[in-house]
Length: 313
Image 1 (cartoon, helix red, strand yellow):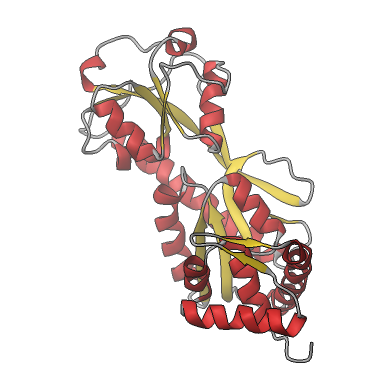
Image 2 (cartoon, rainbow, N blue to C red; image 1 turned 180 degrees about the vertical axis):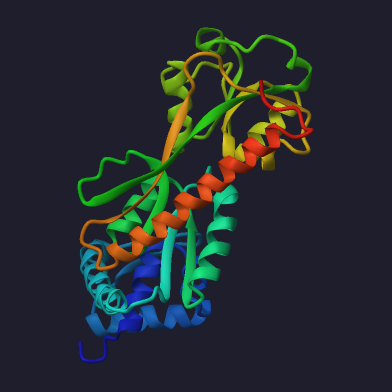
């Protein structure tokens, strides 16, 4: 085992995570042949087969399944050593691995990265955009330092910091602009376009409409908010989107944006990180930057509503 190195462990972890040599090599910033050589060297050193190699997918063997959590523990402990050193510095610097859910990332990330780059030029920001469940897992595994998600996530091992709330709006075909805004009961009877299973925004929309996850046929799924809005513009149905997405997703599509009367569907956006993270003080500082960016977006929307463009009704 004297020849087993940290490179072996990191490449093993990348392949275990991605289940594909090409994607793992890209994530590890090496060539696919080099990754293959490192994995074979590790298997030779341990005297076992760690991966079952298929034509399109790579799977962990039973031994590989046993090795994987131990490798992750070693890598997480090493990362935390670096975090402890970073936490002792007076300024925010070095690598920051932050995850963001897809219904927030395109609208909030540009201003967050811009502001952090100006205030903390020594900070190296790595972004991961994926679903909440995966972000939670990658946080727990030590692959991320923090994540921006919709709260609550209700994980005892994670700290949750609420930052701001925002309302969902109804997006309808432009020809329906003069039609009264439907209430929740009426909305349940319409062809409602929602994100695919796994998106927390889908669950929030269903909760507002008081609809079970097992959807009737008149409801359709999309892969992104952009896809949903385009489908609405084509007259296929209606959808809900968060306010922060309105300027980006509706600017070039023939749709009408309206607020609901009475009870408003909302979500709370916040940051999460491990309770044990040595960077907790620094992450609190970053969360304040995220809060400020969210407030700036909201202020810009309010200013636009008082301008020449017709606001949501």
